[in-house]
Amino acid sequence: MSRIEGEGLRVTALRAPSPGIANLADDYAAWLGVTQDEDAAETSAALAGEELEWIVSDHYALDVRWETQLRAHTQNLMVIDDLANRTHACDLLLDQNYYPTANERYFDLVPASCRLMTGPRYALLRPEYAQHRCSNPPVRDSLRRVFIFFGGSDPHNLTGAALEALSGASLRHLTVDVVVGVNNPHRRQLERQASERPNTALYGPLAHLAALLSRADLAIGAAGTTTWERMCLGVPSLVVCVAENQRSSAEALAREGMIIYLGTERDAGVKNFASAMERVVAGIEDLGAQALRDWLAVDGLGAKRVAECLDPTEPQVLTLRDAQPDDAGLFFGWANDSQVRRQSLNTGIIPWSAHR
Image (cartoon, rainbow, N blue to C red; front, side, top):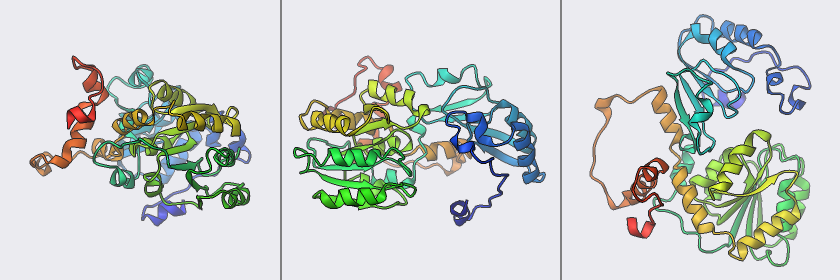
């Protein structure tokens, strides 16, 4: 809350959830801490009669019941979701996760007039990722540097398991960057592991990972938002699912060759990480092909696309310019967009050498 206020935004806090709510795992309805009707009433009271252009809802416990009651306060309503397990009364729905038939998941759950923004094309990334993204496709023809990050808490200490795997004799030559989240309870152990392993740097919480991640040849981490950050920078990855709502998207990405999926936190361990790394080092996993697929799927402009939907640019503000050689990477992404390839006689990805 203080971080949001620090950005100059006004914040009104509603009642805190009851004790123990956070421990109810996937019982999403309980996360609200009150009923939808109670929350809608509190939200309406907080708005104090203010009429808005948009209300944006991002909560697994809210659905059409809450949204219908808030309609009186706004011209438009946007929902952020990825469960596709309940109905919504919204004008715009965002699901940035990857599914081959993403729109179909919501056909019976939203009004026919609702605009769907689905897939990592709409991933809400900080601007630093687009800034650190190379203008041309990345080349991943060697493995020298590995990046490890498992989110803010990492209760199962997957960071430690990955670091131990990389400490094996055949992998100790690799340079490793490790980021430890603000709520990670294993920091002391990780500091000890990092100090005992050569070519290893340990970092505390960072405002963003773009600068550090862009230097990596391979990343090891959790499914979730950092998946899109890695893909945007064309960094292939070994991925572990740490929440049930991440599983189906991670499995779909693995089938498309966009990640190397190691299963859930129950499946991951030192042996699993070591075995996966040995396959990578042996060249069994094609990191170059994965990096290209990732780079094409996420361009870092998702937040701008969403903002444009919420507040479209006036046509008279748009300008034209001549194409430049530096635009080759941009055109490459357009030409290899999945929808473009699907409508083409040759549906395969256009090689960079041919495009250039």
